[in-house]
Length: 86
Image (cartoon, helix red, strand yellow):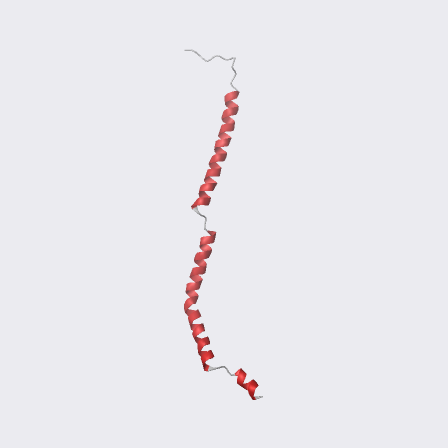
């Protein structure tokens, strides 16, 4: 029975280490929080690369749309008509 009682008592060194660990965690908590927020912001931020790709895709679609109309209108010209000669 003496042995069971001895195991429940914590050594002063262990209590001291636990106390120092708590204090260290409290000091580092704001730093950890800031690091987490910075990492999260980096993950969710839209980069220049993505913006450039979207703009390039929109420009390509507009050029394709314009080319389709240009080709359609340029081939509909009636060849029997003579240009006006003034």
